[in-house]
Image 1 (cartoon, rainbow over the protein chains, first blue to last red):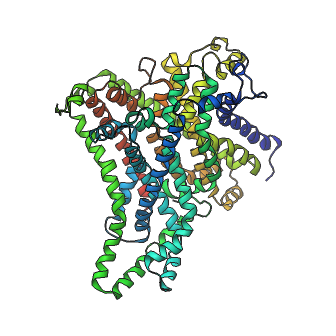
Image 2 (image 1 turned 30 degrees about the vertical axis):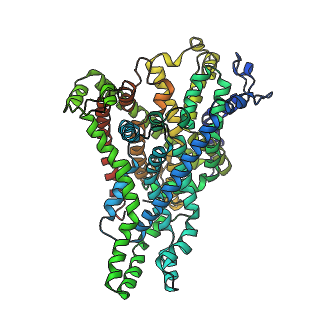
Image 3 (image 1 turned 45 degrees about the vertical axis):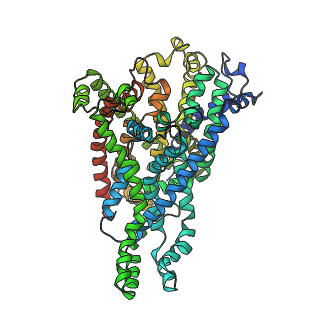
Length: 275
Length: 331
């Protein structure tokens, strides 16, 4: 069916407007980070920082304790996601490939757990961690982040495991593999992309988490989100440096998300939001 | 209901899920009774770590929260490590305080505005994605993905900068448009304007997810359906009403509920952008619980507010779970 000139043009025009709307804050963050100070506070905003500078990045990176917090964030994120992958893989395998009493009930529990309102549970978590003398430690942070991403990981992996035809496993078992061998040698390699996609989302959650670390950890036990919200307070109205800090914080996520997006969207819709 | 996506075919797979057990039970039949018990225990053993983690790291904190909500737990009790039970006092205090009800009302309105904007905006963008040509679709997707992926704390900081009173680009733009009183407007000085910024931030970050979900749902509609409708003489509106809308509805409902839950418990944006200010006027329930509990060190009252918030969320979740459980019987 041929559409009129107007009918063909307006979607593109709207798309351009939306493109600007959605990308502008991200662009503004990155471009401010590269601007000279007098361009940052220019009366007429400078939209293209042609004479860019790395001064703000230098300032952000040399802020006290920056590298300690990078190490904290990376440690907590990696450990919690790895831990939840292992635990979720076991559970997801049982949930997709085996029949047993209480299976439905367990899935329901996982679904509820996925929506757990961690934001309003910080008081209880704080008390528990305090009673065990674990404030300002990365251990409780890692454990709770693991729990935050676990339900999602289970539900998503369930989708990915279900996508591997059971016949493959059966034929491996007919050929003499035990069930465990069949899983490790046949199913696991096929799950690799699924594990990747799932772990990416786990990483994003753990990397971004804010409420819990806000109450649990201070100073050198902080993670980057906490540092970023305080950065601005500490550096006053130094928007260039603040934006450089935001950019540094956001870049790993943006890059990873971008690369994984196709699979990630598939995983998200196939497993977790099975709407 | 499954979403078609590259490489992941959940549709055929769940049906096959029982087959593995047949093999397993055959094997166990061969190797005798002991193996039968072992293989029957296997699923539970596999679930054990996950179950344990859930009980200790999620179940226990919930119980603890409920317990705290029945205690008087102020700095004194905290430092002395004493437990003082005070029955339902925290709850009656909250339920009779005007501040709690104001905050609850604010939270509900806040959630409603956000979710309506997100769902309407997201659906429209999803429909647009479906209408666009391939390259334009990719072009718009890039921006959507960036907005979606932006870490909340980073985007909150960026919005503070965008809406900065002196050098913010938004004020400059509004001034240029001829709204000169906005030239040095302080967005964070009043309740409504602070909320406006928070809502824009949340809507901006949430639309991409809804848009992509809607777009994925639209791609599952076979072309023949459109053709058949056109043959029958349906116009654009009727096609939407009878072809597009029924296909989108289940996705729309489940996404809307997810968004309601997400927005209702949203914490980081509100606290990070203006600490619930000015004058605590932009505190929503989760923020209120945090400020009362952790900020003012009335942990008991904070916990009571948290429990009340969770109760509201549970009602929403129950409804959501019922709808998705209805949609997939095979679970």
